[in-house]
Image (tube, rainbow over the protein chains, first blue to last red):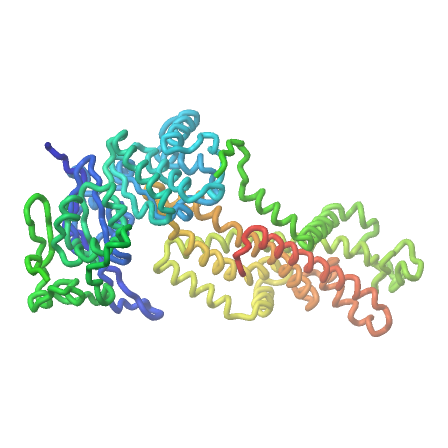
Length: 326
Length: 293
């Protein structure tokens, strides 16, 4: 089946300066995102997974051009989004929307939810007030909210309902791609399932493409087609969901998958937990950034940065010694 | 959640109002504040005596406690009715207070917003300038400004406003710094909103609560500083019925037994400052129970 690339990321890199003192001297650099490459096909769900601080959310901001990247390019339907002027950037924003992690902070507490969902339509001057109202009510029923709630305020809703409001807002402009940054991590498990199912249904109905950012592999397993695992700002492994879970190659991915709790008390934990802490992104380790915690690490890992290897069928990995087993 | 389709939204304001009503002290202070304002607005109807022209044959008469019906709070050293002067003084204090609030609000909010929103060099520059102003003792700063600009009610207002603009800018800046990083601001930017839209629609409404509270508390302070400037005899023309000036004039007669010349203006200053402060406190609790200034 022919797949159309909708988003392509090449060598995306972002460092943050660390400033000190009255004169804001730059004393150091924090490596937030480092040489990230991936592409997303139309209609698929692409997941970015990693622990907190690994650069997932910075990647999101770079993709939306809320931050300027230091190096690298992002192509949306063949157009380099870092080179767009402000008018085309507005057009791009229509097609690239975002759903946030915190359903409490992502809605302006002073606005009625009708206005919140209507905001994108007003910004882009779409339709008359009556048409916009009709569209908002349509969106509300699409995400499972009563249109009667139009005049209510965000504080009158539960977390799950607020997340639905956020999703309705993201859908208002009929975007092609939605970046969901930890959309369910702030919700109860029962609500998580509801929201994830809603994401799936909306994808089928509207042909959406998702970039799904999460720290939780078990959440991602249910919704995504392909998964990229990030560690210290780098993508260390990228594969289809099925391949990644059945045949994880990178020692970090293996540790992550092994750490997913299994609801079976008879099954004992057979894996060795990862030792140590994530190294500071201010002075990332030399060579492979995972080597201080890796059980397979050898001499070359300390010295040389591993390249992204293609193992075939889109399974990419950044590791020198993935062939070795322990 | 039970399915409640009734279309009665609980707005932020109605919740705040409910909260405010629970606080008895705040409600009482609200009525006192309203009373003081009405006193100022209807001054010519309440105070029938001329507050400015001296009537020397009536000087230093005691008030109602001595059975004086025409001058209930007595007369001052120039024979002017103290009650009328206090009522007219309300106008002056409120006028100065509100003008100071207006100037401070406009300049303080704009400076704080610009400083926090655009950051970098502008922030550095504006904040160092506010530092300079904040490094002076407030009353000294006001005195210096009056000394430079000369006396007059308008100049006194400006001098007092200049004390508060840097403080207001600081408060607004700190709130904007938090608000501008919130996801709903980012969401709006991701939707394609411009700076102006984000400032007006998202940031301003959400910094309103601390700003309004600060401004209400400022009114009391402004009344106090006006009185202080009046007391020191600068800023305001001596014949003007200004509470601080009245207090100052009566000082010489206090030890001679003519206590009413000083006590009533003093009481009025205390009462109005207290009510505006209590009102501001009540407002703060109602608007945001978590907030501390």
